Image (cartoon, rainbow, N blue to C red; front, side):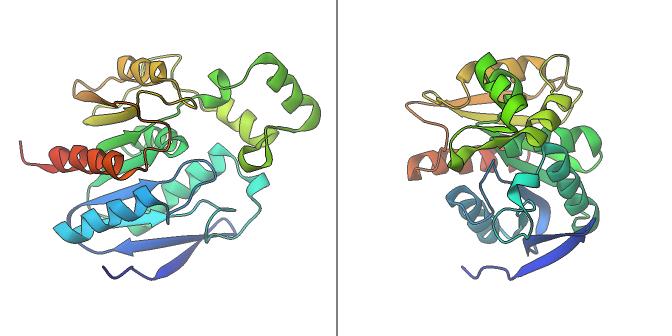
Length: 241
């Protein structure tokens, strides 16, 4: 499989790297998780899936991650959502199937709310909506307010990101998304409890929502059997009804 070349797009002074594969039918738009990028195992598998079927595929890196320039510590959920919206508006024309992993699933939900006419369906992998809320205990919240950050270096959360996430919470009320949604979650996910997937499923306004639970699966869902399960869900979603 030949990888598409990396290109860049300017979004409010930020250089956003992306890979775009031309194809027919809906374009699969992959949204990475927190501190992840467009070259991860799931992203590459979805790109290969699209190539085999002649579908369009678009992957990108948020500013400060992967091949995109910038300071990761300056990144916020609102900033990265703005970049995702620019990707949709400037680089796509056909209907989209959003595939969001973890935090990328949270951003995908906001994309579907803001561009409902563009989104044909949404696939959420270990989706983590509102994790700045349920994912922190009082001591961690106090640390963020006092020190401006919390957590180990590899998963550090900065105050600007936390505050941005708090302003973009979704689970406290009905989520007015009407397109088909497929949620995939690991039974043993220790980062995003399985209950979050059930809360999200109940909050979504769409009548066409299905949740697939992968036995013994963790949060990353990057093992070959887990990726195969994700691709089966996407393939079934794309089949004519």
